[in-house]
Each structure stands twice: as structure tokens, then as C-alpha cells.
Image (cartoon, rainbow, N blue to C red; front, side, top):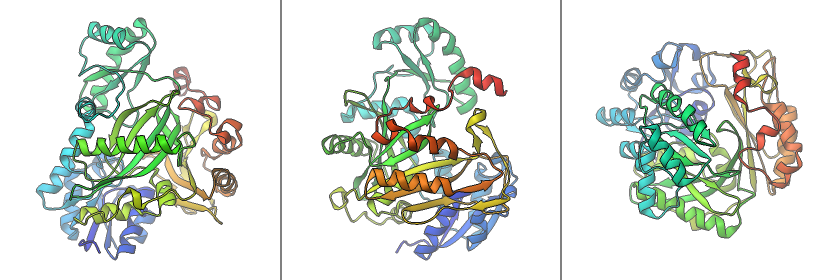
Length: 458
């Protein structure tokens, strides 16, 4: 039993509710920290206690370190679970928790520092013998240097923010002229988004698969992986549909990539839950991208195929308990698929669709899991991310999981909101998806992915 008696949940939406439920099952008092816009949220309703941490705008609530730490003190919470997003990967927040004697349920500040620095992190991977994508050895400050590096590693290349994440700020260049146009823009965007305008140049792997490995690590030096997740179906580097295991990997490649993931985690003395992300090319070669130092949105599909509750494991590990098992004790059981349900209209360039839900019906039945904070009468705030639900299907086979997902998507109702459900129904019927033949560019067959479309909406 974890030593914590009370945990503050510094997040919102479905992940806050997910953590509330895990705490209750562990016999831990759950405190929901909420903004003024989320006073009637399901996490607040179901938590044992709740505390307002500020105004609706995230900078004055979910990103306000002082307010969150004060809430922990006021309620007597011994630990804070940050969920994903917001402060989950902020070194400053983890250090502030440490200074105040509150346990941060997540990686160490040192882990967050290295994981957040793409250049330093990549160097650690090279030293550990983990395959990496050819790139500049450090930050690139001048266009002449960018041209020189691009010529050396070969076009196409990507300009990426050293401090970035979540697929934001990436620009792909096919030749010198494009690089000249995009380089200053990329530096400006990096500075505006992350407070650091340093960028680096990386080889663009064409038609890759995006494969990630879930890892767990305790304070006693034990690090394991819990197999892979296929995350190739994404739009502008934002994941839409994930599945576990990957239809692309055979057992030999799975073992090879899994061992590389553990090496990557050991290279930075990683602690708690995290994800090691790779690109897999058409020849079967794979390359390290980054370590996501938090619980992932798509963690439920790993839970479904392993039987391991990752949120409970986060709490248990943060309390100092040893893992108590290794990868050989786990096996892949069945197949799971997750669709991220966003309040966006795919027919209108994913235009956000906030509003009040006047009709709500959740799918159910065999093989269906729904992680959401929605209910009839719920009013979607305009201030936050468009993710409103995660629909997960599970069956013994991939074909069965697809059939269950298609059925569950057809049952799901949340009127009058526009959502990504119609898009996912089309994907479930697509022969290439059903055969597992897709890559990170797959979704552009269904929706446009051109800059001018964004301009039309502005």
C-alpha cells in the first residue's frame, strides 16, 4: 500500500478523473485542484475534496505553480499528481515541489531537464548506443550553418526547437530555398512558444511509423518496458489513433526496440513512468526521437494488453516502492485501440466545437472502455484543449478490436458537438488501416494538411 494518505491532482478533464479513481481504489484521499471554469467538472464532483486554484485561463490556474503548491499546503496533500500536459514535464515545478517537501508523482527534476533538452538528450542516447536520427551536433544559430548541415545529412530535413515538444514548431524543408525561408521563422516560433529560440536540424525520415515503448522505473535502479504502442495515425504531429501492440512489429524487432528503450531510460537514470519514442523506417531501422517524461494520453491501451494499472504504478513508485517484477513477467494479451475524441469538426479544418451537451449517450458492451469527464448538460469551456474523451476497444485479435471500435464509435452521441468520430469511422473501414499498412502521413488521405487551409480559417 502506498504511503500517501492524500494526493492533490493538478490537472483537469479525463486525466484528472482517471487519477481520482486510481486514488480511491488505493484508499488514498483524492483532492481535485480546479479552475473557476471547471467548478462543476466530474473530477471535482467525485473527488473526496476539491480546491479552486484560480481563474479559467490556464496561466492563472493549471500553470500557476504558486497557487497549486498553496493548494497542497492548505489541504495537507503529501503528493501532487500532474497528469499530462500543463506542468507535468516542467522541471521548475518538480523542483518547487521538492523544495516544499511535496512529492512530485513523476520523474526527477534531472530527468525532466534532460528529456526537455532534445540536443543533450540525443547525445546521451548516442553514448548509450541507442540509434538516433542524423542531425546537427547542437543548436544551429546561422542559416549558413543550417545549409551546411542539411547538405551533409541530406534533404529533406526538419527544423526543430531544442526546447519544444508535442510536435509543435516543426518545419520540414526539401531544399536550400525552403530552408532559407523557414529557418528564421522556426527560431522566432521557438522563442515565442518555449522561451528559447534555439533550434537544431534533423534528417526527415520519409514514410515512417511512429512507435513508442512504455517504461516504468523505480528508485532502486530497476527499469522495464511494457511493450509498444503504434502512434502513426496523427495529424500535424498530433496523435489521433493509437493501438497496442503495433501491427508492424514482429517479436524479433519488438525485443530489439524494447531493449533500446530500456537502455535509453537507463542512460538518464530515469524514474517513474515514461515513454521512449522511435521512428521506424520502411527498411525496419529505428531511431530514437525523445523520452516523454509523464503518463501519456494513450496509456490505457498498454493497460489493456498487460493488465498493469500505470497510474497506480506511478503512485506506488513515487512512494518509493520497488517494481517487484520485470518485463519477462509480462506478456501481450490481446489487442487494444484508442481513438482520441476531440471536439473539433474534421470537415472544417478541425475547427473547435465548444458548447453545452444536450444529448449524451456513452457506448458500452464487451471490449469497450471510455475515459471521459463528459455527461449530459456539461458545458465545454472554451479555454482548454479539444480532447474530450478517449474511446478504447479491446479484443483477442486486432480484427476484433477494430470491429468493436467501429460499433462503439457508432453508439457514441454527444449532440450538438462536432467531433472527430465521423473521421474515425471512415478510418475503421479503410482497407489499408485494416491491413496495418500505414505511416505517419496516412491521415492526409482523409483530411487536408496544407498550410493554406489554416489560413482560410484565420
